[in-house]
Length: 186
Image 1: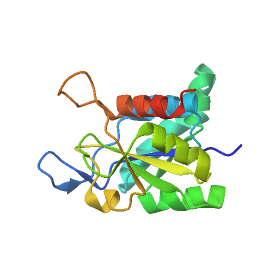
Image 2: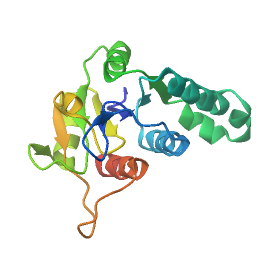
Image 3: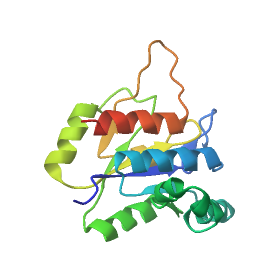
Image 4: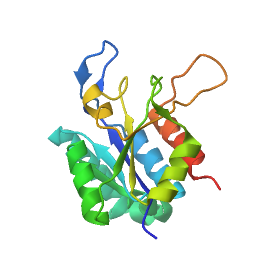
């Protein structure tokens, strides 16, 4: 059975705290933790998206260490998780890759803490994923959230995660894990 969903972690275009469109730095922890969550919940691929060539090289070195290098021998389960990870330069490259793998256009699902209208709930998205059969690309942002040029392309805006109070500032790797659990649990 083909995967129902894919994950993209965008480092560009995202907002900084002042609302400017920026490129954020790739972090090793995000790659590790989101790769493991992706494998645990059955994602088809996990894409780390940055247009900066030096950042792409860094990601390739990290992936190589765990996919083929000493890390692969040291920790086979980590190798398995990192087998889902890939680096791309843009959201369009990700969508083209998914289309090439599946023969279908992926439905773009944007995520973020600040969305308040036109929201799709977790149950509804899960039902649509099951009924429609088209792959979904869950897009997560870094920095202070996804830029309008990304959110404007969304087929769905996933409802924000809510905690116990008004504080709502999870790390992206934590948010990915919670979203995947809500979408994929039996």
